[in-house]
Image 1 (cartoon, rainbow, N blue to C red):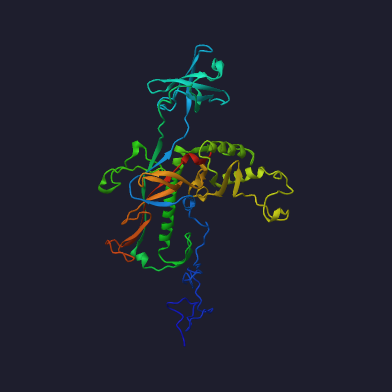
Image 2 (image 1 turned 135 degrees about the vertical axis):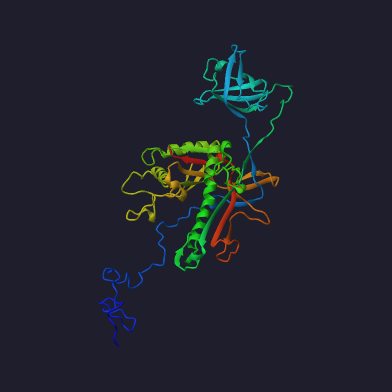
Length: 489
């Protein structure tokens, strides 16, 4: 059989009757100047996606330390106990007269006295500067427009006269009472009080959109997604990533949300339905709650050598926890640099830490030839147990890894007892938990639905498939006084 080698074929190409790649019919696609095609065969294609960033999702923190519970209202309200004992800061002490008939007058902070200190109470006053100068007094009279001026007699004579306590920088607490024989009982009573806190859910939205033409073009790719599923995806590969990103947003918003200031409660026109300005209240996330009601420690470990400055800083945190709920078990979620500071701090407590020959901690029975474990996941200091882990959210280059403001957070383990306004009784809840809007007919924990005219949906004449996501939720941070937020210096 003969073929015409001229005409539509280049002179160097001779077509073959069968599908065989031989020297005479091989097309050099790179030789465009010679009139040949751009490719002979399809390029080698890797079907599997390369996971160069590992697991990219950031959620999981709230699942470890809290729970999710439904709610039906626009607001969640809870109450927390106040202190059991009576104490004041910034009281002013003045002395009139001379020993043994002089009187001590104490002015309590304005607006904080409503009969909490009564005649017959015994109190201890100390200076705020050092806390080393103290005096014990008996309250003999309570006067003033708001019962905030105490007249007292000192148990220790004239130690107050000319002393460091005669100033406006003192503290006091009530430690008991004393009455003479045949006297009347204690006048007045202390009414227990609670502090009420509120938070409101925010509505979060996102979507993924695909045109009908793109949906008709099949292009498979093998994936292993962060939610544990694997296999082949068609055009919903991007939808899967949008869903994972929205799930991260649901947690990140609970951590980062802020209450809107009074002066900026409204968005401009055209933001909401009808083109009117819409009220946006915001919500109090974890970081905001700790800064408002918890403990903030800045510059942990400072710029000191590894381990040398961290222990003193950590002991200061423990002393403050003693003044709060003193919850024994706590979890530390830290950035990489702060986690290493903790590792160095714990390692420095070991006597063999400075020795290069060996160390008495590590893997494989600490044999010199084997690897040492320089990381610690748990430790005990004082009467507290701590469990330490890296928090990916603080390290990721697309989230808090971009800045150095937050170094970590200390979260108490266990549950707290609170009075639930809806149930009308005391209940036990995790210190951190998420409340989402839900009822018998509507569950807004995580909604997704398809609109458009592609992919089985026929809701509009728009030639797209639009996957919608929605969630309405808020974070409840109870007993925030037991939390510690580590911030960069």
